[in-house]
Image (cartoon, rainbow, N blue to C red; front, top):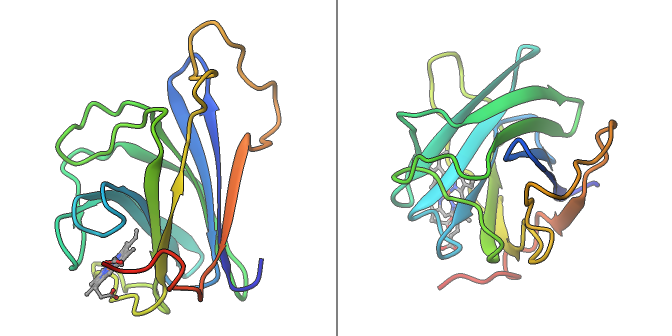
Length: 180
Ligand code: HEM
């Protein structure tokens, strides 16, 4: 996992939730989100981390290449967050359809650009995260498969926390998804 970000996701049949597990190689803030174009502009995202042993986390929205604003409606719930000497990981969930059309991406079985970034430091209490520099990227993912689109008839995964889906990407390969 060294030098890589990783995302696992598990749609929860019936409840309409989708759970994410996101890991990035930093002990500072980490963020991921859904973008209409692979850029920050128009992206629904979350930023979180662990500061002095306590996780922090919120649902944000970005209209441009600047600090994403905290959403008026918080539609992502942190389940747990932790870090070790090299990595931070966050487990969180949201509704597949959050109904916050203005600041959240509504997940469908269409492919979506998943973007990520991380910073070297946690923001202090009451402060905002700082620019990520080259530590950002993205990849197109299909979060729901075309057939098993979490209809009310399919059964939920039993027990355990095995992710149904997973994606890993090198954090230093900023050329892979290109810019512009
Ligand atoms: C913490 C505050 C943030 C600031 C001040 C910021 C600022 C910027 C700036 C100035 C750029 C353009 C220069 C560059 O490509 O590096 C950029 C690009 C980018 N940012 Fe952020 N960002 C922030 C947070 C985030 C977060 C949380 C994410 C992901 C969830 C993210 C994802 C990206 C991506 C994917 C690009 C490249 C877009 C492209 O290829 O055109 N940023 N950001």
